[in-house]
Amino acid sequence: MSHTTTHVTQKPNGADDKIAFVLIFVPCFVVLLSFAIFGQLVGLQWKSWLPGAENMTNVFGGVKASVYTFMSHII
Image (cartoon, rainbow, N blue to C red):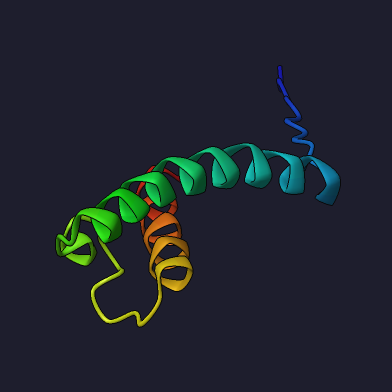
């Protein structure tokens, strides 16, 4: 007696991936940007606070690099 099972997985479409990316990226960007702007205004070395931002020259580039670094750890 042979018993065969078939397992079908559905891959989400690109729109679902984009929405999930935005729902993770935007809040993380806003939070880390607030840390970076606070550090910039106070005169602290904020780049050492954010992983991936150490070699960036501006705030937005450093925050973007930091968010991508953070996202690579959670995904």
